[in-house]
Structures are given as C-alpha cells and as structure tokens.
Amino acid sequence: MHTYTEKIQNLAKDVLKQGKAEMVIGFKQGTIPMAANPFVAKNENDADNLIWSSTCGLNLANYLPGIKKCEGKIGIIAKGCDSRNIVTHIVENKIDREKLYIIGLPCTGMVDKKQIALLFDDEITQFSEEGNTLIVKSETKEEKINKQEYLRSNCKTCTHRNPVIYDELVSDLVEEQIIEDQFADVKKIEAMSSEEKWDFFDKLTEDCIRCYACRNACPLCYCPTCFVDESGPQWVGKGQNTDDIKTFHYLRAYHCAGRCTDCGACEEACPMDIKVRNFTRKLNKDSLELFNWEAGLDISQRPPLDTYQPDDPDDFIM
Amino acid sequence: MAEKNIKIVSFLCNWCSYGAADLAGVSRLEYPADIRVIRIPCSGRMSAKFILSALREGADAVWVSG
Amino acid sequence: MGNLLEHVGIEKERVHFSWISSAEATKFVDVVKKITEKVRALGPNKKLKKQYN
Image 1 (cartoon, rainbow over the protein chains, first blue to last red):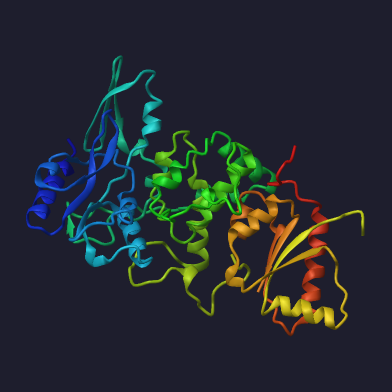
Image 2: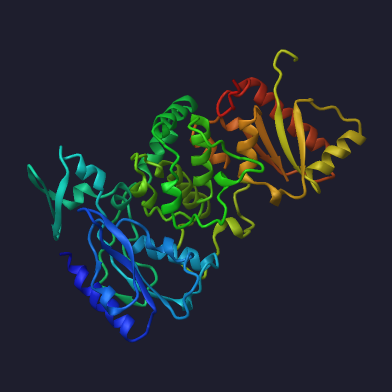
C-alpha cells in the first residue's frame, strides 16, 4: 500500500466529518491492477475506498466544472498538475476558490502503464510499490523495476510536483526536479524541415481512432459543444480521413494554448498510445518563450492570451 | 503570371484592413487578384477554425489582417 | 496558430498576419504584393486539402 493511502483516507474522513467539504474527489482501486478509477467519497464509509498509487495519472480537476449540485464545499485531492488545473479553472471562472477544499499531494511522478505492460507477454495480475520499487506480477513472471525509469514522459520533465494551491497537505513538500532542457523533444521536431515535420505527425496520428478520449480526459476541455460535434458549419469531418484526424488534433491542441499544464492525462487516456502531447508541448514552449508564462501557477494573474501588454510579440494574431 | 493560379483567403477586419482595401480601390491602386477577401466584423471575430477550414477547403494560403 | 501549423509541417508562408490601418491603402497594396509573391514561390498547397472523390 502506498504510504499516502492511509493519510488520504484519514484526511478525507476528517474533512467529511467536520463538514469542511461535502464530498472528496479522489481515486479508488480499479477492477484490474494498475487501474485507478476517479471516485467521489460522500461519507466516511466511502472514504475507506480512497487510495493513492503511482497509477493515479488522470487529472481530477477535470471533474470540477461538471459538479452542479453541491451546497457546501468540494474536497479534491490534487497533485502538482491537478492543482495547476484547479488554478486555471478558478482563473477562467469555472469555479470559486471558496467552493473548494484542496488536499494537496506532493507528487513523485506517475508511471507509464503502457511501458510496464510491454515487459510482459501475458496479463498483469498484481501491482504494488515500495518506495521507489515497483513490484509487478503476472501469471508467469515477476518483475521488480525502478519507478524512476518507468515514469511517464511528462513526469520526467515535471518542475511543479508540489501543489501550488492547497488548504491541507498530505505530506511534506517534495524536492522539485531541475530539468536542464525542458523542451528537448520539441526542439528536435523544430529542427526538421516542413516535409519531415508533416511526415512525423502523419506517423504520429496514423493510429488515431477518433475516440476523443484525450479531449474527455483533459480538464481544459469543458466546452458545452466541442468543435468536432458542431455541424453547421462542420469544421472537421467525422471519418478516419488522415487530414480530418490531424485537423482535430491541431484544434484541440490550439484550444489548450497558454492553458495546458502538461499533466499528461491526454496521453494516459489514449487507447492507441498516441503521443498527443507533441502538439501541446510546442504551445507550452511558445507561451514560455514569448510570454514567459506557465499555466496555472497563480490565481491572481490573467493568462497572456486574454490580456494586452504593450510589449507583446506582434508577429501573429493567433 | 497566370500559370500559377493561387488562392489566398484573406480575413480582413471591417474597421482596419477592409477599410484599407476599400481605400486602395477608391484610389485606383493595383494589387494582385489572388486574394479572396472575407470581411470579419473585427479581428477578434477570428477563430483558428477559420484558418484550418480555409486550408481544408483548398486555400493555398491564409492571411489574417487587423 | 501560425506557430503550431508551422510546427506540424505547414510552410510558414502559408499563414500570414498583419496590421493595417484603414488609412494605409498603400501599405495594404504592399502587403498583398509581398504575400502573393511568397505564396506563388511556394506553389499550390497540397497538405490538409480535402479530397473529393
């Protein structure tokens, strides 16, 4: 059991008992190993189901705008990236800070489940972790692996592991990683010629089945009607045409410009293992370089794309 | 010139570039006829969807001007 | 959007942005000429175009 699990359960019980919040959004163990399901605990008994592990990769901030009926406060367990998305929600007026009770969780990274699954020929039957060691078992073999080597790619370059906003902390803050070159992957693509880039993204998206899991997992995507569902005019075709697929990915990424916290929920949710962050990463790099902006760090600051500064770069309108 | 028939879809702001285009016409200035002008009420009306849509529908280039 | 499209392999010259005041007819003409020249040099766009068949 992860060391955080017990603390989370106790904290959640405490929060619910004292009425600091009406519900606590967290994770519960899924029906198969390495699956953590988002879960809303509404009373103390529910809180026993809450867990924490290195497989809780989805972004819980995603569930906040959907909660309509809640008289009291909403409790939420937030790792670094979740907390930044909560800030984004507050800045975008999706939810009031006063409505939230944030249980901050200093994160040590989430694991790449698909990469671990590749180690086995058969199904994984057991998963547990002790500190930095992951113990993964299947019917035929057992592997002990180092968590650091199997982190998700966005966790490897994460520089905001500690929550930026919280009412209570699960444990002491962890040391932040120092990343020398945060955007090495983006620069590699930037160095290519137009044709190479085109082919690279062709290859990247060729498996896309247009399930929109990346959109649904993303806390930024809360539009009542997504552009892919609009029919008059229809911006994107519904089929498996490669250009339609790419148009969807471009627009999805562009809508995240200056808002994306690189939480990796999109890649986590992708059933075809498409590295969709390749699109948003470029925009993150641009917002950092052009506007010195990283999303979701401060609730008092407006994002660069809805403010005007006289020294804004002027070689593009959008 | 005619061997390369290109289409540049231009989104011009009603108050700025569209006015300039109008003035250019009134002043009888000559400019290439490869642009296809779409008047938008303000550059703020511009959406990324329009750019992609134009390219999808066969534009060779897109020009947004405020 | 311009930067993203360049990143995914659409030539930079295919998406232009500019600011022209309603009094600047000559600037308008200059910009149109400049853009047309650049796009002519590139030739017709093939990427992203819808295929009707």
